[in-house]
Length: 517
Image (cartoon, rainbow, N blue to C red; front, side, top):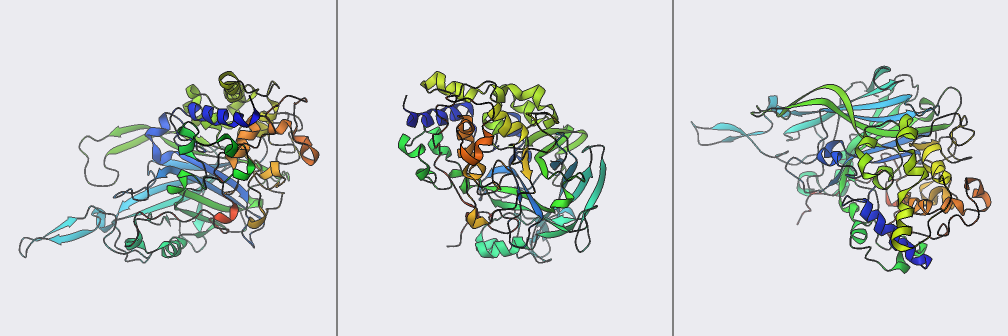
């Protein structure tokens, strides 16, 4: 089979392996999480801040509740008050969290639990009746905005084990412990045009005091346009594109930003000084992943009273139901039978639970079985272990890991070398490390990094074919191991750093539910 047709096989198998679920970084990727969209972690970004003047900071962005239709009222997309949202950092290479940022949300009806009420009826028989909508007029961020309920959250930092470590509250730079989330972009009549909404949401970027850190950080939580580029329709319509398009780097953006760009998502963005994340040992590499947990027990109220949380009571231990580090792992690497198990697992247990999916991946074998395209022949796939489980040598492998897994467990997480200076937005290469931009994916992940194209190429053996300055990435490969390793696979969707904001919180404002006539 000619190599140009291999990408058709690759993408077709990706579509099949997704079993009807979106080929996105982690959008609705496991059976159980489809029933709990509010705690579905969809993307995680971890990078040295490249906003001018913010050198010395790391930005972490955890996206949840994907595939939001902007017009999805009247309730829109508040996060779960009965959930625990977390971002974890490992700073010593042992695959266990050393620092955890926790978010707890509280959604409260205004006006004493009544929301907005209107006087209805004639004089003498008038009654105050609650409206069914989120707002009863224009919203600007002022104290008197006619909002039916408010979305608030608290932040905590835990050092050590996320459940038994030292837990301290993060406060606003000006004092206070309760942060407010801007309302979702209902539409232009309620919140103005895109510029007006951006100015409104900007009021909810907070400076934060983090216990144990001498320099303040920043936080923003709110609805954003989903930044992940992927061509879903093309993939699921039997890869409805010519082979010449999807095997050529010149066609990397043939389909623009893809269908997910028409959806919104909720972003938890935090910017923290580097020296608040790295270990005292001087190790510059950190690993990161996100989780969401629910209480182990939920009791449904068959006759709920008034209130936003009246339909259920939650209790018991926190139970992890979502996990995301490196993009696409649970989506196209982990087998269907283990997807829920992966979401409930911890990185330190990956070698025991999931190593076979990396050392003996099914995707290249399916390509060969179904289409006759020669898959990489190096087993175990130590090139994939390097990309997914240890970090790349000389790039983002912790210094105490001197061999493949030596000095620390094999573990899936997003690894960032904080000692590699950020690349300015205009100079970033969307293919990251494989294109010579050492500050990009898989050394962390930035918004403009094309993780689909990079992952497709690595799965088919790209690391076995690198030469020159990147030859050190050729781990466990022999000549001829990867016949398709040099093919420039693309899915036709690509963005660049300058397509997004180049300042915190980086993710673009959301799409409006309605535009003005």
